[in-house]
Length: 468
Image (cartoon, rainbow, N blue to C red; front, top):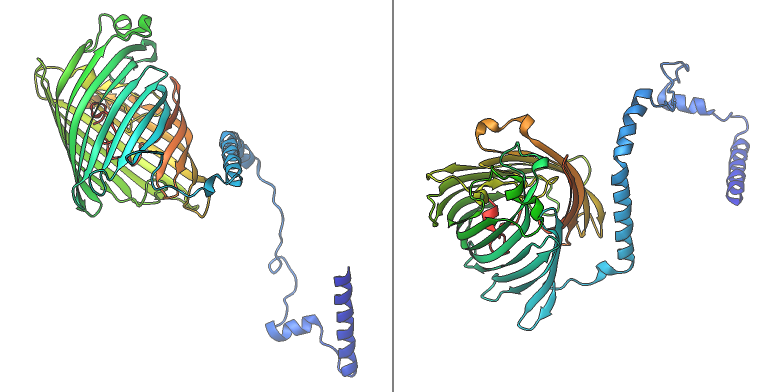
């Protein structure tokens, strides 16, 4: 009120002063002043007058927005819950704790102890411990040992060593044993159906070495050799739905049985991305060829070819990214023996269809693709720091025994959504997701990803007999 009075008083005094200064000279009007600077003002008509009208949405647009709002409900709920939870943790000062040099509980001898766990369709809820030792044999070297179990009785003991030989050369040594008593089997090929669900016990042991060489320009070479012994037998759980019961008279080759042998692999990797957490452009490509020679009584020999092509496309909003991926693998038998069940190509991480449990399909080859749309859910500080990213995804793919089997109507389509945890260094740390297919809903909590999957597999105890 006072401010309006002051401005009114000031305007009155100003106009009065102008009139008294030269009462004989009329004060020019606003229109005359504008005319002196901009010319004559045109006559008001439809062509010289702008009309601002709040146009209502047409009916078709309202109808089109209905499914958009309905489909967006779970994502808005996820966004709200995630953002409020993280904001609460931020208010409590959780993110103000200074980071340690290495994660975990420090033990005598500079060892670090960490709990580990996850959720997957194959293992259920897994839990365990891992021990790490850094720079134990020179700068950049690492020791890793892991032991775990799960609610589906999946037990694993594995570990490895990494030696940084020099700036461009590295050496991995690793081995372990793994048992999956409730591995599912539905049949061979893309035609396997949900109604033929059965269970068997898959046990594997392996030991191997890998030499990695940095070739420059983001390209590296892998040379791997490992020995594995894989056994398939009846499970001691779900005996009424055992593989031998459900598929009696049509058992896959190699069941029950054991396969032993050496594998040798040569691979090339190109990683043009700047980080694994929020890559905005460039891509990741990998290709490999391996040769397997059986050491048991069978004449099992085969070659395996594999490829993986990924690319990231920045979208129209900050830190919105579309990740695209296509992968495939193919076995070519050289010996007289058929390839046993435990050596067949399957859908297993990172080559997964995330609406199905791992090891759901078996064949002589596979082909698949993935798409992920990612966007920031919450970031602690800045645009690229510690935080959570949400994403929706779709996977499509199939296994096949012959290339003629590859067809669109033989493919399986899955989709889902999840949340990615990104560290303060911009690197990927873990993900939680829900995957949907026409058979099941798969809940996943893991610290690895199908995109830009970790290259140090032997070091971290990854079973090489399940991966191409």
